[in-house]
Amino acid sequence: MQEQAVDNRYDRQQRIEGWDQGMLSNARIIIVGVDALAQQIALSATALGFGNIEIYGWGVNEVLQKEGDYDYSQGMLNFEAESFSSRAQGLEQLLRKINPDVNIKGINIDLSRNLGLLGDTQLIIDATNSVDSKVELIQYATEKNIPLVSVASDEIKAKLGVLPALEGRSRRISVERKRLIENLYFLEFNAKKQGSITSQFIAGIAVDEARKLFLTLQNEKVLDDIVIYNIASSQRFKDKDDFKVEQTDLSNYRVLMVGAGALGIMSGMQLAINGIGELVIVDFDSVETTNLNRQVLHYESVGQQKATSLARKLKQINPRIKVSAKNEKITLDSERFFKDQRFDLIIDGVDNNKTRALLNYFSLKYKIPLVSGGTRYNGGQVTVSIPGQTGCLNCQADIDKLALLDYKPASCIYAPTPSVITSNQIIGAAIIGELRAVLDSKRYGMPIKSTLKYAASEDLRVRLLPSASEFCECSESKTMLKEWVGKMKHLYEVAAWAQMHY
Image: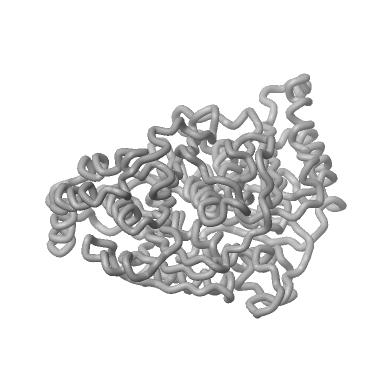
């Protein structure tokens, strides 16, 4: 027996203990910038339901959706805008479709000479790579005692910091606050091109920190340090580079992505932007209204198949890529599919451990690298498995045991899981950051050998966990793989029976 259908786009985040959607719906926030960072920040702020969003930035859209030398990463979320329209207004046009409940304004103006337009806003997010902008906005925020989130990125690295408002009557600035302000200028990024993967990763954290300024959940506090994401660091969250990362080129690779929900959308978006050669999307599910708070590219697709909807949108983002959809479920009977298709890599973007365990099996049997992502409303993680080179998903995360523990009898009541966009945005970007390293380590450096973790309520928001197993020989053992089927087969037979009868 399933619970009654719900027609509410915010249902999954309203299931979070202590969540008050009204706190966000009544908020007014300012986003400064129209490039990759601002686009990703505006995207998740809109999906979360910040009630009033103003986007200030200068520039027009170039010719979109045509073959040639156009840099699709610069038109990330302007794919529905008219050519040569204002970038701010083109972004507004898309965001209004993603969430019609939000009042969004895209304003094509150089804000540096028009700070008076900001008025009594409740939050400023500077998403530019301009030191001049950050100096002016931090000064304005300090004078008006308005909280400010400062973010910056380039192709390799991204940084984030929060300047909270001062409480009480005293506006005296301490030595510590002066030091924080100096760190928020992010001088090293001045005038650099913003990166797509790094921007998406840090944007998710930025919006979650912005949300905490209006709606703080149990055990949470606003960030009091600088967060760094660095693709050129083997530790990922250290400032110092360990190797040189070259320009993205994924045009020769063929990737299977299982899952077209929130993680699939956030991973697929980056695959499209970065020009993946071919992408096959597998998902048996259809779009529901309750998906829309995080599955942002499924706007106007309620009732349609998720895989088909996502494939269509990714093709709009970058018409050069080859993308196809399979509206079906991965089962033990998918053996021939994995054997014949010759994928270079599998992305696991599913929401259950039974399917993860099955993908790990196919990854091992056919020696296909697997990048696995999982999220909760307050965090997420990424694990990389390369048969013969790293520990498999079971040796690293005990995925078979988790799949067996997840088993529920067919009579159990379906219980929706609380979920938001921000953790999916962060983990989706991290998946593609690791995918590039797996596919071409000479160009992008070595992938992680331990689990990458994001936790919204921990002081250390992002870190690499100690590795449970850096290597295993599971892919070389035909006996083990055969025994796996015997041990786990009943799980998938029961799941198939339950799907037909409930």
